[in-house]
View 1 (tube, rainbow, N blue to C red):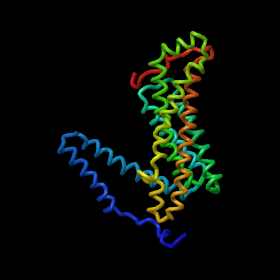
View 2: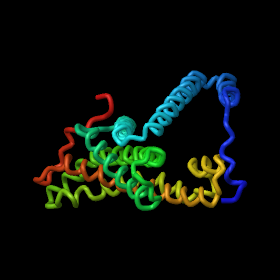
View 3: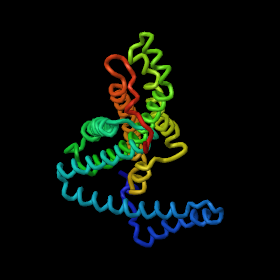
View 4: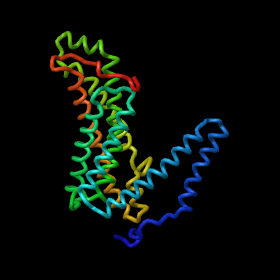
Length: 271
């Protein structure tokens, strides 16, 4: 690696972080001048950013130092539980059993994709080395969480709003798969739109976080680009598999073996 790419990141102190935080005051001042009422939200969000990221940094340093599989497994479990909770509660509609199905989907799809990347593509030994596994899994879970939430919202909305149409198809001899195919396809399509849009403009409109972080840390931009390509493919694969997996599990729960639609488990958030 050329010498100019091996210097490492410039360390930031408390004052540098304070100056960065002060930049948010500009947004707060705009909110006050225009009477938008956003200054409280900005303050709370800023405090949460500081607390959450400092806590994560402390936990990750501890996990990296100990380097034990059981500890990594616990952290992964917490990450998936948090992603499951966020994904389910982002949707305007839900159904009984949604959280369990979301958890299963995110665990299987996230770990399978990340295992392939760390073990086969990067060749990390062991494959669960926290320095690689946790950041990569965090990125794919973040994207999959958004995608599955969109899929869930779209699927339940279609099944509820088009209930009469679907039941008419079933009454005329359509199988449950034939009646559900369009809502399922629409849900998966909606989940993949953000990922496809991001892949379309990556490197042109914006530089992704992982690539930017590696470059700031002194990595060769060419190596940073190659890692980012892997990450983008990881995200696309995990999001698509998670969306398809979840809608199929939801389909099996909401359509009976007797080819009937059961919308009773579906309800709007808060009902």
